[in-house]
Image (cartoon, rainbow, N blue to C red; front, top):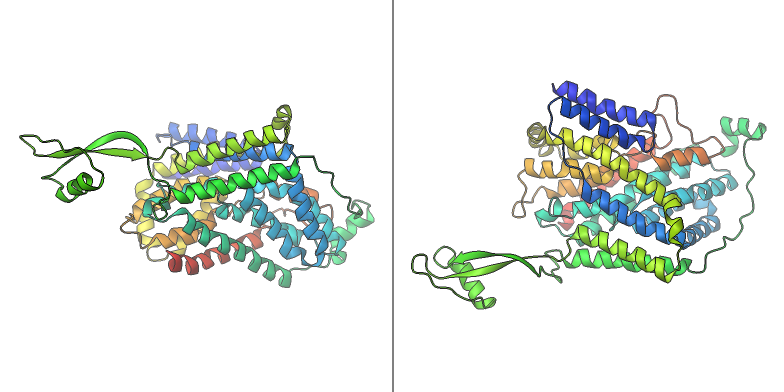
Length: 488
């Protein structure tokens, strides 16, 4: 029966890829129905991931309508145009920074035409900087403090439950992802064919008049409150980072304060805890004839969990931008960021639900594989995450589908987290969204490069994003296996 289930899983994903766009999510829902007809129980819908993506997109949409995204693009464009000879390094740096800042790789869209024009002006085949830049925007998701993937990995369901705090994770993932992208850029810069004038497809298009001439750059006219919207968004991101760090166990600046109930602690059962609660928290001691003295220990939780904090902070940021930057709210739903972001939510809904339906019904088998292979060969987890993200189409959805199962399989706890470095180091491998040439930024790069150097081959996998993507992930994961054991 499992073979039939795998056929349904892969068939639904293949259908979605063939249809493209939002239909990837639709096909995921079809796959869920088909799997339930085969006797599987429907998995959990990743509402937390979807809501985080929606809230971040909502804030970025407000910033875009206020002109903030144009301002960021202007800054990035100026950097690229002032140093065109270093386009292969600056292009991925810019898209990496934009993604880390915004928490979504869709911001890379705005940089694609700029990268193409600058590369053409330097007689560099645009496919080289474009391929690295698109890959960098995907890997940067695993280093962004406001991305759904990072927030999930820092939660109690994942690494947070193993006693690894949010700031430590960022200190590992930010440098390793960036270094991975830069080393990849260095390798591509050495080994790739760079001369655009010798590209056969470019020559053909140039002779046919299909290549637009490189035009003189004109200064972009910004909206009055563009800079203000970026400042508000930046303050919001810093607030998210501060709060998420402050509630972590190792920092502990913000402690649980909302009482949701009480736990009875008897002196004769837990004498040390009883004495601590009585003396330090000044709790009332109640005497009983049959069980002895006891105190009622308050059960406290955080007023805002990390997930709820990022969702509410992003909505708050959007509110401030709308009010202080005089944004026309009627235009928000028609922005490119909103449309692409909501499309991503539908894709995550369908494909992640499909993936969780399959994984949750085969937890025992996955645990056996994890115990047998991951402990003996730690890089195997990175390979599994790579393959899963290639199909599940989302970094956050991949992490949510597999990481808790692997943690349970390896018997990890906060007191027994010796193997946690494997999870931390392998996390970047969830960024294999470039393997199947269907991701929006990848397709955008192909369509906007009028030189023809960025093309998808007829064998699906032979496209210019494949090699730099594999290199960047492999190098980032390798760096993770160096950094993580030292910092955990």
